[in-house]
Length: 616
Image (cartoon, rainbow, N blue to C red):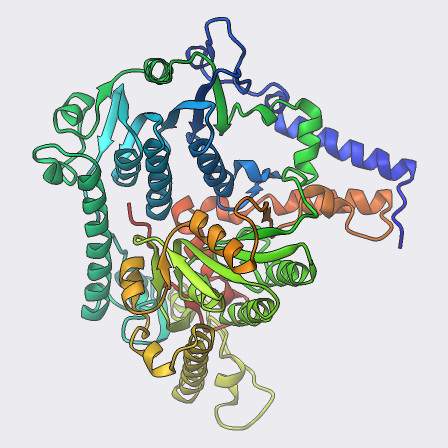
C-alpha cells in the first residue's frame, strides 16, 4: 500500500523533530569544535579541507568507535562506527595526499581486540612511509599496546598518567550476603567449567574455574607483552609494563612514551614530519560530513547516515551485547534480539546486491532459544552467500553459538571464545520474606502429588523439589547437547572434538585457534577482505554497515498509512523506551545483567558467559 502523508501527519512529524531538537539542545546545531590549537592551520583552509599538496590525516579516537551504530537518541552514521575507523585507516595507508598521521586518544580506552587491530593497521600506515604521531592524556594496558605498535612517536599530557599495571580479573561472590538475607540461589550448570552459579552458590571460585580463567589471562598476557616488546625496545620495559601507574616523566624514562606535551605540540610535530600545514579529519568529531547543521541532524534521525548502494557489496552486521528473545522495556533495546536479528538476516538473504555478509560479534550470550533461532537463520543465509564471523572482544557461549554457523571464524589473539555450556536457575526469596512476617502458600488446581511444586517451579517464593529439579536439569542437559550438535554441524567437525573444548571453558583467540574453535587470526578488516574473496568481489567493493535497530523515523512511520495520532503514539512509546532501568546499573555490568534477563522472561537456562569479564 502506498504511504500517504497528509498535513496533520507532516505537522506531527515536524512537532516530533522540534521536540527532539529541544531535548538535544543547541549543541547539535553548533557542534563543539576541537580546541583552538588543533584547528589553527596558519591561515590555511580549516579542518576537513585538504589541499592538493597534502595534509595531516587526523584520527580522533577520543569518543570511541562503537561497533553498533545505535547512538541512544538517534542512529549514528556508519562512518562513526568501528567499521568506519577501520575503513579510514586502510584508505589513509594508501592515500598519497596523507603525508603524516595524527592520532588523538584523550582518555579513551579500547578493548584488547580493537587495540590489536587498530595498532596493526597503524603499523601498516607507518610501513607505507608515513609518520604516525600519537597523543593521549591517559594510557592503559590496551592503549599502550595500540600506541607502541602503531605510532612512531607517543606523546602524553604533562598532567597525564600511564596506567600500565598488568592484567587481572576480579570476580565477586554473593553467597555470604545472600545467606544473611535468607535468599536461596537455586542454580544448576552443565559443564565442569560453567561456573555461572558460583558467584551465588560459593564464597570463592572452584578449582576448575580458577584454572580455566588463569590460563586464559596468561595467554592474553603473553600476546600483550610480546606485542609491546616487539614494537618498542628499552631496558627494563617488560617489568615496567606491569609496574605502574607512572607519572609522565617516569613513563618517559622507562621507554613507555617518547615525549611530554600538549596536543597542539604533538600536532605541530605531525605537520613538520609531513612537511604540510593542512589537516584532514578522517575519523571522529570534526570530520567534514559532520558540519551539516539541521539537515544533517534530520538525516541522522532518519537513519540514513550510511550511504546505501545498489552495487554488489559486503554487508557488515554488528551483533553486540546480550542475546534475548525480546528487548526489555527496563533495559532498552540494546543487544541482540531475535526479532531484529532474524529480520535483518532474512532481508540480506533476499538482497541480490549483498554478495557476502560479515557478522561482527561481541557477545557473552544469553537466551538459548534466541541463539538457536538466529543460528538456524545464519545457516540458511550461508547456503545463499558467504558468511564470515569476525569476533571482537568476545564470542562466548551464545555468542559462539552464532559464530559457529558462519563459513569461517576470525578472531584476534586476545579475543575470548568458547564457553560452550549451560547454566541457569532462580533466586528464592520466600525465606527472606518470612523473616519480616510475609508468608505464602501455593494452591494447585490438581490434587496429584507434586502438582504444587511443578506449577510454581518458576516462582521466586518456593524452591524446587527434587523431581522438579531433575526436570530442570534434564532440560539443561538437552540444551547442552543441542549446543554441541550446533557447533559440530556449523564447524563441520565430529561432536567428540567439540566436547574436548566444551564444558563451559573459555579460551583466548590464540588458544581457540589451537583447538579449532576459530579458523584464523584477524580483525574486521581481514574478515571483510575474506568475504570479498569468497564472493568473487574486487578488493574495492563497497561495504555497507547494517543496523539491527529501528531509527526514530522508522518507528514514527512504521505503518502502511500513518496518521497523526499514530505518529504521536509512536513518539511517546519511543521516548518511553529511552527511560531505562539499566541506567541504575554500572555500565561495565549492563551486558552481563542483560544476559540474565531471559531468566526473568520465562526461561530457566542460559548459554551465557557465567561472569562479567572485562580484561584491561
